[in-house]
Image (cartoon, rainbow over all chains, first blue to last red; front, top):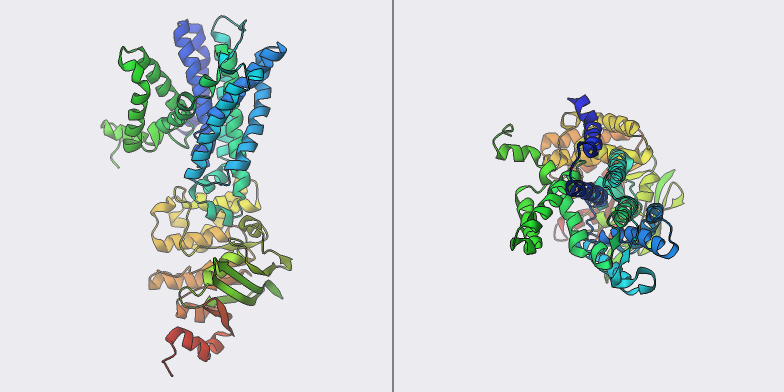
Length: 315
Length: 240
């Protein structure tokens, strides 16, 4: 069982790597790529929100900064937007340090509100700095790298695997223990020799960097961004929180399960006639149901879920 | 030799002086008891020594180095640990993980931290509860966890804030035993306690505070016979 558990991530990775070989349609591949991208964002958010307990409603700031790093580089220099990835790492790190300096001295709901505001500030900046960002016109990549989906799939799969490994290593190290200690009681953590400001900044930086990489990938993959898309409050920031809440906060597989559910769910709803327009309302209802019945998410409350269907052991 | 030196510290909250002009020292290897009626300023004093509050006035020295103004985590790294009167376990972590988290202050390796943690848990007798989630522990064990966690940071000075309050008689005896064992290890202890039986039996010296001021300082016998202390505890009308 333990060996099974140890190799489980590798088995999943192996199976995923074979997906493009079985000839899935472009639409299905597109959905899977989006699932992987959302897994990356979810895992990144989870480091800060799940382990360290600092709930951010502004992750669109990192996603958008990553996307615009690639977009602006491409638009103004003409070199390939893939170089935006390393630049996104630096840019997201700078943004994280800046946000951390301002917001991390706030606690609980005040931190949440400040991240909400910061996400919106970035969107407004992007809309108005037309000289660099083209404002609401957005940035379009004229010639995309590949027509087929498989190369994009392997790139995002690699990023997702890297994120998974980094999160796992961090969560099981001294840093991970410190993050959780800060989440559970910041005062107690300080008395145990934990510099809470420093470790919250580390969590925010790691979280921001991986979200930024996902943003740079998005620019390359979709070929078009504008501030309303990549700095969106509902479609990016809040969806990020939902991915993790639905899947399971502070679990390794939670963000991945959450990404699968949320991406499929949103595609499904959007394809329905009339109801489709109200997909955000339905997201809200789903979130309420999850918070009431599965507060630890699907992965966190998996035993409870099994019992609900009469399969698992009684407590 | 004095390990901790508190010089004329005061703490004001708004206009209220919670602690005013208190000085005392803790000698290496002793157990110093701090007593006083409710609201006398004992915990405020602790919070200043531990870096939780910055004193409004006065200075605090630990091992000859000025620590007033440093933050809690910096003071912890220099070798001082504390427990909280209102226990603050890391709720959704197991007892072992709680203690591992605190042991990390002396090492970066997980296996070393776990070794320190297991050793400390054995020392305080929490081995049977090692894998329980700390949220569900009864108060007596949570108080013990506070002590264990503080000890795992390998302190030279341990501040115990009412670690015996709310315990039943058998838990109380056990706690006294643990405090004695900690002293035998060579760790200096400063303890706030309401329980007279405990404080009189374990302390080498006692500091008495009332209305934020130090009113007496001496051996348990001297304190027990000090008229000012009797007055503070029993009221002026009582002429013994």
